[in-house]
Image 1 (tube, rainbow, N blue to C red):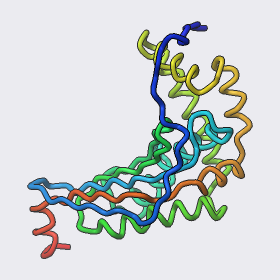
Image 2: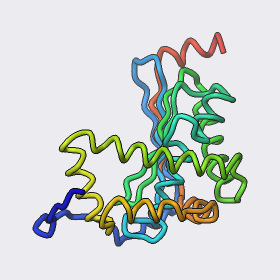
Image 3: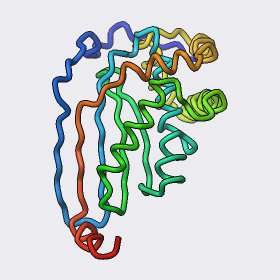
Amino acid sequence: ELNLDTKDININVNNNKNYEINEVKRFEEVQDISQSHIDLGFRTTIAFNDPLYVAYLTFSTMFGGMFNSTLSANIREKMSLVYNISASLLPEEKIFYVRSANNSNKCDLIIENVLKELKNYQDNNIENGEELLKVAKEDIINGLNDTYDSASGLVSQALKYDLRGFRNDKEFFELLDKVSLNDIIEAAKTIKLDTIFILRGKWYGYLSTYFI
């Protein structure tokens, strides 16, 4: 078990401010590329030191952080709207985001369905919720174990634990094991859409007018 004294490291973390969202900001750009890309930025009230942090991390994994996540299973596999799609979080900044790449001009449909899936979580309508929760916990543990394959991974994880108030893996795993679907729902309810950014592929958008 790695012991790392971080008391002399000054890391400026903005975890006290909650942003008020008055309106969703939308930006679009067109470039001479073949694929379109969507970035959805969300705000949350959960920081790394919040009691719901571990549930928030688990929600992120279930929603879009693993190969069989909700977004991947529904928007990529079932609906075939994207080439890839994922979700991640920046707990130090209280930011949650979803990213996708797609070869279609259906950006608004993709955004609509991402928000629909988020609402399903918030409304306790999670498809295969218990099984997905179990798999997400296993994925988090496996990912954590992978970080220990290098010295930089060990140091990085020790710093994260210090910042987030965990003493060691055992304490983190105990909190992870206690996360329930109700916790996932509560974490999801804190997430609000703040910004939409769409990078459209110029040539594909032109051709898709005729072939899609």
